[in-house]
Length: 402
Image (cartoon, rainbow, N blue to C red):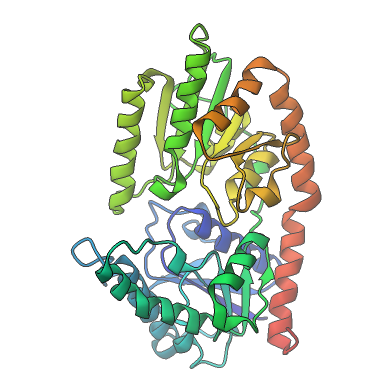
């Protein structure tokens, strides 16, 4: 039996965490022995599979700081991941044939000290996730950026989560032109989505509304969540007499993350400023069961990140027959079929509001697009296809035939 270790920075709740858990489920379904090693895991803030015994989770390095006086998050994340790698390779009693590492490549040189094959899954180059407005920030990021590019190239195999990310990888890591990363869409295991859907409670969503729009994303500024609120505000201005439309802002929320706390309050203030507080429900850290209820009972998903690397939520929404309005860039270009399973829009309130207006004017649009979305997911983004491709990549690596 092949033994696989997933090394991940923080097993909280987010798209990257969902992706690695689904990858672990895929390999486990093929008879592989799978475990997780991480720098942080809170059973009260994680996906079900990492707290119900589906996978063994070993934590190493959680005592290390996440920041230095609110700064140097990247440096601390790198150090925490390197420490976890040192523990895994030099001090743990774990045996493994392959290590599946993602997000942070700085630990790859440590992992290469073992005889295991190293697979690195690039969600997106880390160096592109931060801005460098000052000289000090540039000075701070220069060695980190160099380390990321150098260590990414040390993995035995590099995967990316979309064709969009593959292009960004090629343009960003100029010294790695010899590496052709393979695209592995992070398709979720839809088994949980096939469970019975619980009826909505009034605490989760308002009752007896004609049209309910839904946003699902972490409370982070880069997710552009204000766009959903501003677009909804424009929609209500167009139809001042329509009172039974609503917006639900559902987001991953971790009180340890300062940005989550700050941005949640910023969005609440934006809703109040636009006089929309009574028409918007804010949810934080909802369950998988609640997600199924939301996607089943809402009219449309608003997916606002610009140049999103892939985006798992639109796939989940379409599987649950919920149409998607998304920004016309990045991953949604590969997943959402414009005017068939939803609408691809410019990242401005006018464009989103116009698309939302179509659902208000055509009461049957949500059902038609929802059915088309389910068909698209089953045809192009099945978990079975994902499992077979990942299993083939892993077995090829282990046999020396990548």
